[in-house]
Image (cartoon, rainbow, N blue to C red; front, top):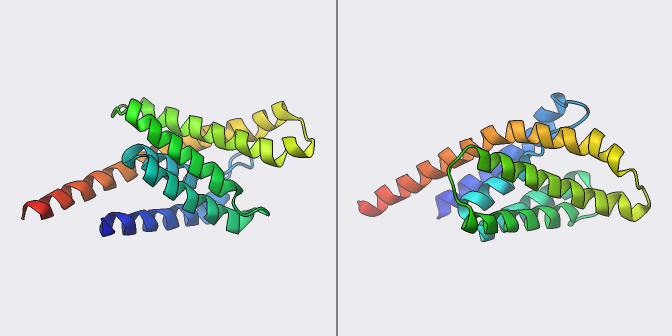
Length: 171
């Protein structure tokens, strides 16, 4: 349990550093992939609702402290996404390639919609189609492409930790 927690913390820190430094150099159409959302979706799908919710909260609060003017908005958004992805795990747990793609794209779409409503719509900026075409769609596509590889890396690491833990219990 302690190993999994430490590995989760290291993965969150690495994802935060990648998202805030490395991927800003590789921005396409002024959009950076949301790696912390991918980590939230991955842990929500692999470990369930509770882990997805807590990891989403931590990832979101890290983003809030770094970039946002309102502390807690991204934390709330990623926490709810992690919870619902973990809930979807109970219904649709498969090992296919399409499930991570769908979950990452739905999670990123929900994140962008939450963000649009709270940051733009409530302030009277009603240019949804402009925001959709120039921000949401490129971010979703870029996040899905990068996020699928990250999802499978996290999945391999979790499988390794689980099999290592089972071997230690047998000894």
